Structure formats: structure tokens, C-alpha cells
Image (cartoon, rainbow, N blue to C red; front, side, top):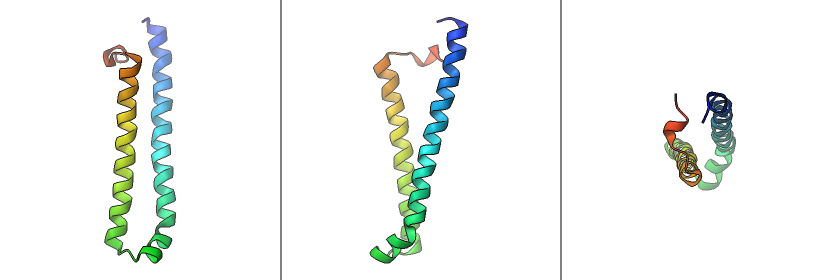
Length: 84
């Protein structure tokens, strides 16, 4: 892999990472907007609502990390090929 290809790939990787963070934050925002309705329908306490937000964010971020790791294995790219 030559230097120009590595340079081009790093911008794609940055774009994918940024989109992943935006996706997690957008999902979290939707959950936060829905919290009053969840509290009314389920009768949840503020502590339980906090657990819901934390668990959702943690699980979603972990799934993104896992899917990224699986993609590296599926494409047979060595992680050291992407670094300098």
C-alpha cells in the first residue's frame, strides 16, 4: 500500500467515525426527547430514566465498535496497515 492510498483512506476512516458518533448522538437525542412520555407511560423514576439513557448509549456504542471490528476481520485488513 503506497502513501497516497493510505492518505486517502484516512479521510474515509475519519468520515465513518464522525458519522458513527453522529448516529449515536442522534439516537441518544431521540431517547432524551421521549423521556417524558416514557416516564408517564411506565411510571419510571428519574434514576431509572438515567439508567435507560446510559444503557442505550453504552449498548449502541458497543455495537458500533463490534461491527467495526468485524468489518476489519471480514476485509482481512491488518490494523497496522492503516496506521503510520
